[in-house]
Amino acid sequence: MFIAANWKMNLDKKSIKCFVKHLQNYKFSKNLQLCIFPPTIYIDFLSELTKNIPISIGGQNCHHQSFGAFTGEVSASSLKEFGCDFVIIGHSERRIYNKETNENIKKCAQFGIKSNLKPIICVGENLEQRENGNALDFIEKQITDCLPEEFNELMIAYEPIWSIGTGKIPHQSEIKEMHKNIKEIVFSKSKKNVKVLYGGSVNEQNIQEILSVNNVDGVLVGGASLKIKDLLAICGSAVKHLKNL
Ligand code: PEP
Image: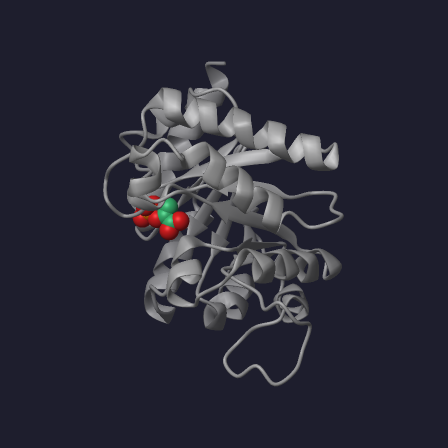
């Protein structure tokens, strides 16, 4: 079970220190893999503080070139050098605010893989596409266009845009249909099985409901990952869910 905690552009040194203090006292289950995605500038800080804690660290993004004149960007190899194992690629916020295209996202994933990072490629429809019945087709195109030519380990995060930060989540049947579809599309293109995470307003109250859906292999958590109490409650519920399987 994979839990991705995407801090986005939040928290500072003081709050990260406090967060880690609580993590130090948490008993991690070996069935749970927690990966925190801090703001890039805090990756090294978090990595130093969590040396003896069984969590992973990831980047929220990497550039689609390996190096060069790209002011303000971060390369996959720098993320790796500073202790990252994972990288989120193509989050809807970057697609919208940074105008990232499927073509760029595919390149970002390929550079991530080249630097031994495991990419988590985000896909997700907007509300209009969901309401018009176009969600499945839209996601199929996103995956077809973004999937790297070659990979060993890669995850897809299904994150409906209308669910991110809104408190609304899709019906269980919609998540089930989408995750099954995503796995089938990736398999048909690569002959590889991938894990599919669900992301969008995951919290302590709805995590059990989400994890009980077939083909949900973990979650990507934004807002609810910013408070240690909320994040650990989500981890606890996930472990409980695994025990009840
Ligand atoms: C996200 O940013 O990927 C996300 C899922 O955010 P939230 O959990 O706040 O909806």
